[in-house]
Each structure stands twice: as C-alpha cells, then as structure tokens.
Image (cartoon, rainbow, N blue to C red):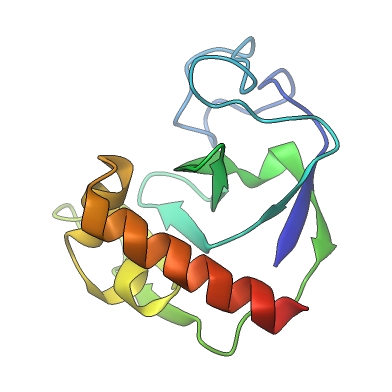
Length: 139
C-alpha cells in the first residue's frame, strides 16, 4: 500500500482518538519525524492501539520507521501484499496493541515492534528487506 502525505500537523485531529499526540499543534515535519507534504510513502504495517479506533501506518522517513496516524495521508495505491498477516490481541490490559497488520515479524515476533522503534540493527535489516519485497510486489 502506498500513501501520500496530505497534511503535516495534528490540527484537525480528535485527540480522544489520536492518542499519540497531546495537542492540535503537533508538527510531523519536525522533531525527527520529517514527513514531507505531497510525498508518497510505502506502508509497511497498520495498527490500532487498545485505547483508540484510529489506524496508524508504519512508514519510514529518511530511513527511520515510525507509526503515523492515517489522518495525515491519502491512499494512493490500496494494494496489500499477499505476504501480509494480521494479529488481533483484543482490548486486553496486558497489550497496548489491539490489532496489527503487516509482514510476518511485525505481527508474530512479540519483541520486533520495540526493537524496530529502538532502531536495533537486526530489526532494521528485516524491515528494509521486507520493504524491498513489498515494493517489488507493488510494481
């Protein structure tokens, strides 16, 4: 799946749903996020946290994978890889992720989510290998 960035701030967000920011003035173009208006990104995963109904897309900006609210994007290519998986945890208190879609390691390696956000070398290698596979499949 590919998405195009349509806005850079949380200005129009319902903060009861988008629980990863605390104000409507958050700017996703700064602070290590680096989103660019009008740029197309490959979605490597989708998740919904336990305390919200908002979807978040896993994309990388300048080689740094991160989760971004879907409200920042328009879908430009809705193709989902045949190698995507889904894991539903439900709304249990012991897991902050309700549902996650994406490549195998993202869904079924319980420590991969944290390792990827911590930029651990092995997780980053897996992420970019899977990204290459997905981008070849989308073409």
